[in-house]
Image (cartoon, one colour):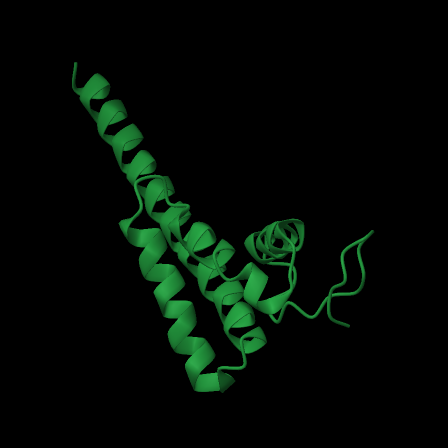
Length: 113
């Protein structure tokens, strides 16, 4: 019987660990892409960092964790970026492959080089 409780406790700890990890990964991605959008808005380094924090906060308060993305989507027309480019940047940032988001062209996307 003790083994059942230990197994359940281990599974619960693992679940909470994975949830926490997903939360931090999403916040990091929101921050990275939010900073990129802030720079495109001409906010400068400090302003872009503050803007990125607003994207992170939007993700935290949203029910599904997509609030950061949804917040940044509202600014796309102001910076001349299509939603598919924003999705691509989220995908790359989420994969942790390119922290600076300095990318080469991908298909029809016009990304920084």
